[in-house]
Amino acid sequence: MDRTITVRGTYAAFLVHMAVSIAPWRLILLPVVGLVMLGYVLRFVDRRRAKELNQALLMGRRVSRARILPAVEAYADKVVTGNIRAGALAQIAQDRADGCQLMIASASYRLYVEPIARRLGFDHVIATDHFTQGMDYVRARIAGENCYDVAKLRMIRAWMAAQGIDRAQAFVRAYSDHVTDAPMLDFADEGHAANPHGPLRALAAERGWPVLDW
Image 1 (cartoon, rainbow, N blue to C red):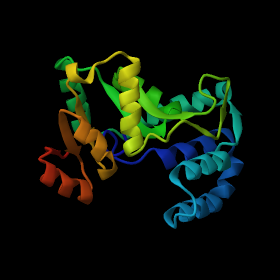
Image 2: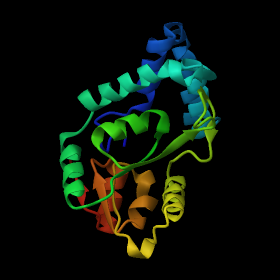
Image 3: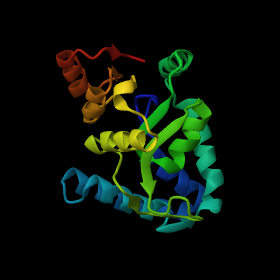
Image 4: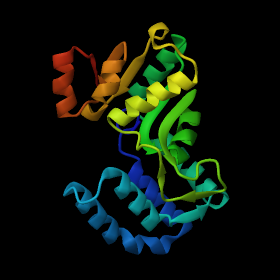
């Protein structure tokens, strides 16, 4: 989703939006968030743990789902209004017209990916889940895998199996802006490098994936 459908990333902006909306005092913790990200860059903290720590800092370790829902929906409105690529919207419309089932598979949290997907007319979402998925509160802990890199492909395969979809009988189109989605693009019948950064653009040239600049 991020930078494929959207112009800018959504994760950091989501956390700041939530802090401003439900607990503005937490903005004083932004320097600590910066230290967590430095720890991630230096590989002292893995990607999963960095996400959990940052959520705990800017949203709290445990928050009422009912309390935060209006702010989550407002964030989805903000993304759809000002952070969606026109070319992505056109491709979504074309794929829908072609009879495709539309899915977002994203490393971002399902908490806000689902309302964005709903506004864009997607049929399904695979995303990073919270440990308290389906409960009346949200805890700053990830359930299962962070939907990223090869884990994203595992989650797609698991979803297809759960739905009773035979891979041999399915035709898959996939779009991504980042080289970490190479496993997913390889898995697809049609893999597309959409708004690719340098490493993916180079890999697309090697693999023969069409490059789309939305």
